[in-house]
Image 1 (cartoon, rainbow, N blue to C red):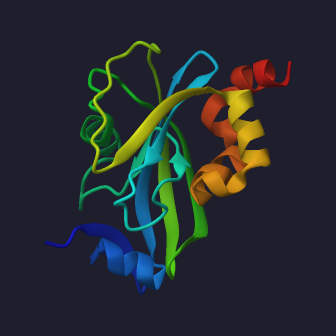
Image 2 (cartoon, rainbow, N blue to C red):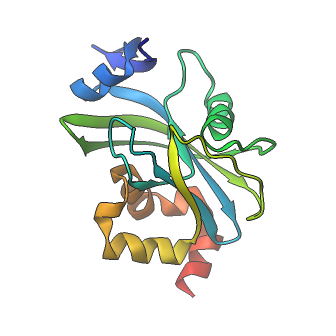
Length: 180
């Protein structure tokens, strides 16, 4: 069974098979979520069975909305499906677009609604092993240092988010604390 995602084909938003969208490098809709607690971010390491970027560290969760699914509903759905997280109300922080080679002849060309949700580090998690192989709370400053030291361990989109959009996603308060 194929998964159909909203992608632009010849300028029209159309349901397209997810793998085909990545093979063709089609511009498509996406949602990313960062769950934070103070200056810590809940990170996930992608399961080895993922068809692109397996075993790499990414933000809390990211996905493609179903056809006609609202971004907030998509964010909440994927928090539950990937990590067993319920009861959070993600806040929309930014709308961005990026294009990145994700290996294996696949390209992510995403138009992303980015959300942030505040939680506690002891929040119950139940990672779906088909999606997530590991989770960790990482301080923002430590994450930046790890990306600088070992960029190959992180997904292309996470590196783009952290280098180009951090102020929009996390706000200046968190970034000021990181620089202090």
